[in-house]
Length: 314
Image (cartoon, rainbow, N blue to C red; front, side, top):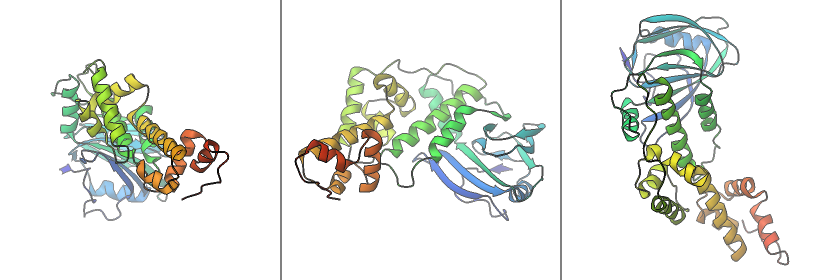
């Protein structure tokens, strides 16, 4: 039995499927982070519905359990009782038979967990782009700590409810870092990630020019990488090495710098300045401005023109 972990809706056989809190992914849908919450009794029912099966995608199970849990897991012909808790990760490669059965203790206990779901073709393309053979064999892993993947999960789930115009850049960068970790830690044949040693001056200039020309738009990592003439898979790493900042941080700082100039040189309402630099709401713009600059846009404008009356044009 093959099971599609990337399906938009759970299988109709599930009686009480886990609650999907949110789904964060690449625009292509080929990499997704699904965050769930469920009662232990619901997880038990799902295990009955989904016995031995093979995932269609590579699946990373991230456990956020507040207290240790006992799980009986079968993976590639081996069975093990896991005692697992917050910070542990199990890796289910595509097409590898697997089965999970929780040990029913407190059936009303609420569990939080995530699935990082990656299409095999996406990892194959990433491998080729970084000088790694397409013929990769991935190692099934029972639950064990993987702090990096959990930090990635935490970073994505902490995104604000109101989208930031640089969120696409941030999500793509972080999810690609997770995929690089899968290649580094869970591939049977490991090679150092390669690719161009650095961005050339022309490539860096093209990327930065593209960013500045599109600060009012919803930028994404693939478009900036394309402007530099590079694959998205290693652009973010090379950009940070060249500038000392991630693309997300660089874009956010550039937007705030543009906003500062508009605050100093114009009497535009703050709501219009927010729109010009790519923010959907003035409140979100003000919040981001305060994080970067240490004060609100209105305070910054008053400090730039101390003799002028307050311009609370929002």
